[in-house]
Image (cartoon, rainbow, N blue to C red):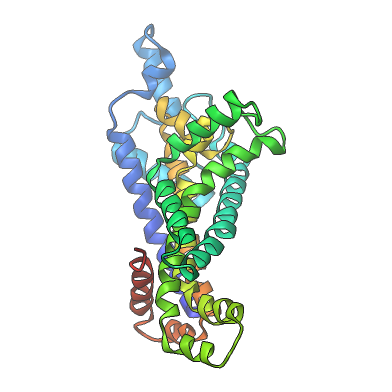
Length: 329
């Protein structure tokens, strides 16, 4: 187990380095001049050179890249924002807890609603309940996040005036962002749980449990649902990563001072250090989530612990993850 964890943590290093180089290269090649954005239309060559040196843009590509990597790796320093000269680390420290809280609340609602409704839909297969829940799940999955957020904002915030629509000043301010952020997760959980439950309910050991006269609730939750958890956990990890990465939409629409809004403003103002830092942070979160999902597998099914110690454990684990992700219908 410990060898597996250490191996996965070591793999994070080249992954993060690759993400850093790719994102830095893309921002470097993006059209536009951040120096001109700061100086405006009236400037002298001396002013331009001084500002370029101050922003660290007076070097070539390799010089800027090597300097950036050294700062990030040795000092965990992402530099300062081109827009306001504020340290990026300080801004991230203030904004990231908000985005993380929204993500955790959204995924919690997704699990709390999606899994039970998926179980109910599988148990009531082909009934009115099943058809209704399946239609709702497909509708939620088909509606883009920004459209759902805008509809919720207009209906509950502007038309009915039940809920506030800007900021996070009170409990009510959290309701619309969390609900709109959780709906795609609810749809994904419902579909995955229903699909895997239907497969498990057809297994021989479920028929045996029913033949023994066990309570239906015992058969469903103790025997069937327990064997559905691996694909569900995989979906939880994937959905959580999508929620964190897609926070730009929800936070921008509801004017939430989180990482998403910070990154959107940086994109609009060509604030390349902020963009690089936000993408690196999201990549790190995805790596941590994938590691956590793999470790949770061992607690769900003790047989998987043997895979961690085997020489081909990583390949076998990837097969499990691929099979779990491909079971959704």
